[in-house]
Image 1: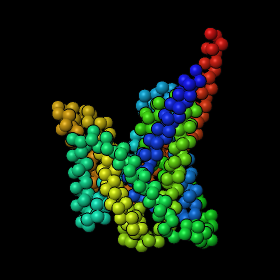
Image 2: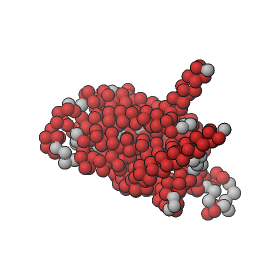
Image 3: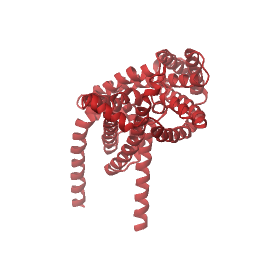
Image 4: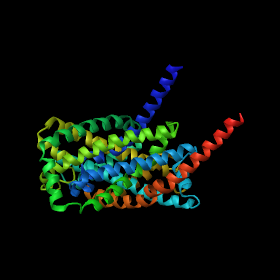
Length: 392
């Protein structure tokens, strides 16, 4: 009996960790690994950047926690049902999440194309627009013919880039300028004046990361109760905060270097890796970064295609491959046009505005109305179960 209980406990722990790792992988993918996101939203804050990063991860994991609890407790089947439950009796407000989600998907594909093009340009300096077209064509071809292969290798590429990125953050933090002096000088000059911006940026950053919510609620179905959900998100908060904080510290200690290079803020982690002299890691990291960004572009495009390839507009086209090609071609062409503005502008403005929208339609509702509804529903469920046990 004790052995079976122990096995059940270990299985529950493994499930909680695996779900927490899904959020970690989704957050710390190719976009995070470029260093652009951390540079755009945290590095310019000075010493409050660490506080901002911690708040951002707290908001993100708490939002996911409440979403998964609501989804699991009520045995919901889709994100639409989830948001209808959250917004009830104003069910139609779910359209605002869909607006956020699809715009964010387009921005993610555009960022993947732009990031991969920028990375390739670092190794073989050719026109940026040329690389955008090449990457767009590769993503289109893989979406139509090789999505299964990409999904199989994406996990491996993701893990390689995460391990190498953390290694770069640790080594880079020691080889950069003294971070304590940097933060001390920043405090002397600006004091607490940047704290309000730090809080705002934390909400925006957590906001656009909520694009992973539909994936998280599906993956979180394996968690059997509230405690497992909470355990999973505590673990995810810990590892996401460590990774993001390390990234912010390293970039802050090197900002005097990469900000003085034209376009240096686009792929700061890659530039720092080369400057440190880790040539082998520079090559491995660059290859994995491009592959990871391609994977992100393909899997995101494929998800978009799956959603729209059977729409009424295309019902007269009998061939599934042709329908998939038309939808994929449209979304990739649109993303390529957006990617021409550059990775930094996509993350700063595209992700930024989506983040503001997500604050209003995801974070604040789940951390207020969601918390209240989950508690009320939980108490009612406990009362019903208690009454049923007493009757029996």
